Image 1: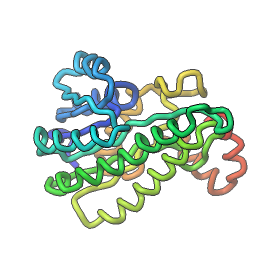
Image 2: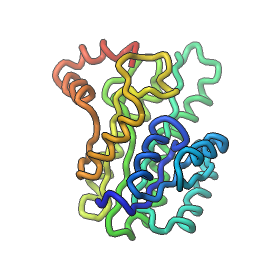
Image 3: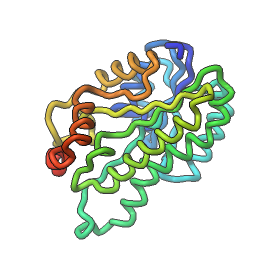
Image 4: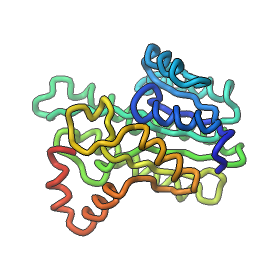
Length: 245
């Protein structure tokens, strides 16, 4: 995969990890399209990142997702990298949550259905390129869940499984399937939670280095240790992650 000259779509690109990825990949000489549901945030992103393209879309609304695909096919026919980064995490207990059904539906739509549907609908476009990739951003919580985010963890576990299966299906094509498993990153989603966070820019630099080297699983040593611990002593990993995540 070449380091510049790509056309890259990033969901959840108006803040946090997505914004950092957009900045890094634009800086490297790529055409980047950031997707977000907040128009004001996208305008601020354009002010910060010269040359950034943005499209307002709520991935939690299937009709808007379909419209997004039509726009991408029309405006960016050279699209060759899709980064499914958008994520939504609610922390709640089922017996206490008054909006339980709405929150379950919203989390699954954004965290699992949207990346699956977007990948499926853009697959023909990606297949026309000389080299292409689908990148799914999952979580260590896909391996070891935490207590107060059951649907988020389940959605990321399903996305991890989907990523593996899709990689096998596409292994003889020009489309690579990559999984990014971030450590705890200092974003709005993680505010007030955990220690030892890394900055989004640091993660973006790590991703760029590893992705363009051809890695299919991109993460840090800390997360690899957790994965290994979960294989060897799953009970200890569960105790560590249950409350804090």
